[in-house]
Length: 287
Image 1: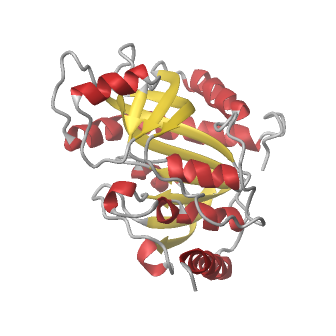
Image 2: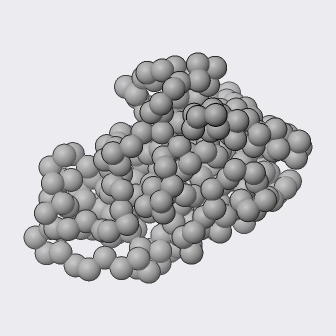
Image 3: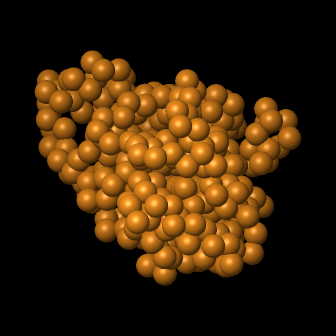
């Protein structure tokens, strides 16, 4: 059995395992990033399964990622919460990083809302801002869709002309106004491999490439979601601003601290967004 066959068998075994334990199908996947796991406390849980109990799931090794799959309801809506994610820099392949999204898509999810903490590159941004991702740059050097395609899972060459659903971006910005948030902007997210943080020269180059914020996650999950036909919304907490001409040390604890301070605003925003996705008037996005 080659690697691609084993991967498919692992996905299908995990789908069967969770289908037997899920009391209902989640319409929305919510992936929580660094320092943002507290939103899971807002979910009315139907079942909580540690990643360690799910066959073939990777295991979260980053201290700020709790490592639970939570099925429940948020704002009355059926949702699957990934409380903690996996990263390329942990040694996982992009296929492994995105494994949970593939499984939940096959279980029937239709929308992916993901969050992360990112370093700001745009000098007009402020630390503590929430960036609605409008596009991305994938500098990981690996794509989770590489290798034989499973046609029943998605097309060989998925279209990425609108990787982040325009209607969801509009819902997010409308929700921002409703929640009275003043620190929300839009921008381009770039994903680098890590775990080493950017040098001043790399920061300047990433800016020149058109990126507004930089992180080490999310893109593999987005690619798998798009391949599976899901609508995607990405939200980044801008934890700091990287100025290549006045570069300051980047401390992980500071990034987590900023993300945790912004978390209550982000929680309010996500709850409002999910409520609007349910609305039949939300441009055809009712799951």
